[in-house]
Image 1: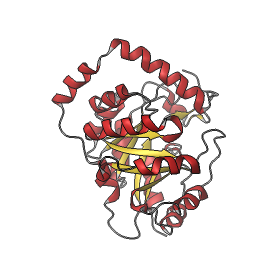
Image 2: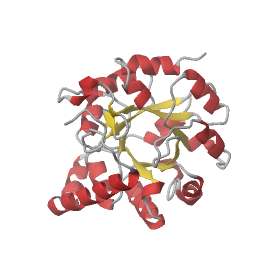
Image 3: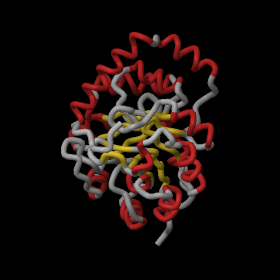
Image 4: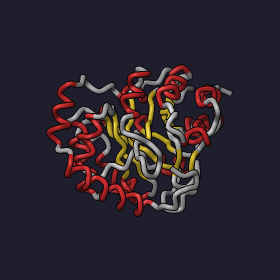
Length: 280
């Protein structure tokens, strides 16, 4: 491991992911995942957890467990070692009022691990999103077998047919899908498939971070939200740091936020979440 950022753009990450999945598929057949899934109970309802709001002045926060990123490197020095404990952070988030947990599982670029999913679920009763670059049906089976309750599908990484096929498979495996977009064209392309084939399993995410330049603009969600009829399923991602940010987004009907880096940079992520959710 090293403590300097890995220079990578989205194309490089996806190329690496597809190569890695091809290698893994050769060693682990889907039948092995099916056997594991047969031993598991039904996934926790991620969709309901984040869309069931207590009041009109509350935001459901999907709190993220994230050690590093290609652009920022390790978010804190202590995250680099093997002593990193995702379960402890999950408990902090739960106690601070998180609606759900997002967990990075990409190891090469983000320092995540697939086994973090079960470690988090053993620690808290919240549903867990597998945050990774899902590009192959094999990964959907892998996600379900690893304990995920939801998966991320990034529109910028997937063709139209891939987006549809992965969404259908996720629904068959009882997983919620969070379809993430950044630019307008991908938003328009993804909209017809959000909630397909089952509305109660589909969320739409708008990433305020441009994955080509890594620049963040919180107003990006505000602008694109005008294109969306049902904002109850809309998740804003990246750049959320203050209660004022959440209030600004609620004013345009956005009441679900995925927040990671601003929490994980703090020595006490739970206290950071509690402060974020404080109502001004």
